Length: 295
Image 1: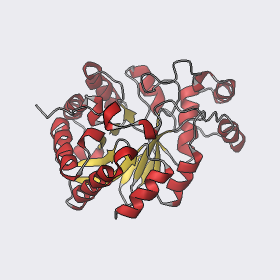
Image 2: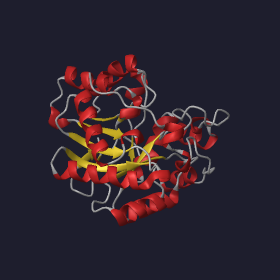
Image 3: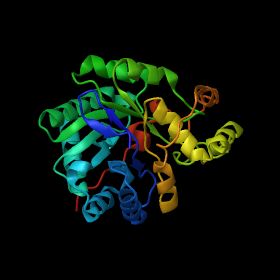
């Protein structure tokens, strides 16, 4: 495993298992398989509806807590200072944890950015109180990050974004790099995990001839090439799968390297086409939904 050191000194496994769109009834087995195969970083979210199952798999695994890095997200319906503190309580209870390793805001909610900054101030309080080890954001564009930095005190440790060769968001990546914010890729292999209703006619990056050629050159799978591309550029990657063989394949990416020409060829695949909603389109009216209390 490779590790990234966050801007507050916390070490995070660079590769983790994501469970976006993984049904609760499949989550426990997927996380159990990942932990058995050597994963130590699990990424979930309140809005995924599977924090309970992630927590159960963590407890069943027998892996010491200090070896695990658990990341989750506050949904927009729980933004606001007090609401976000309660959102942490709900997630911590479902996960069965006293402390969460990385807690992030799931969307920028630009239609109500005051609520967003209040939510982030709650994350700062949780960090100061030792209830989380690091805080961050997800799907924040440059204008959202700029506004957040002006209104708050703690620079986010992570910005989780859609990042793959077809959609690279270079302006955001450059801003994050300049401010010591780790870029974390959701959908790092592209064409597998997308928001419902977006990109049904998309092309899969996995089937791109450039990707398949580089994979053949290394005797690796296209998915492994795409994950290696992200890791070699200093990013965190959190691929998802519920199939043990794919989960095993996705962690087997530390025994080879892409050369400069191969990295450049992958960089050249940019299409500018997003696979999920525009951040400005995420509003409480369109995406708000209540996050249940812990049982």
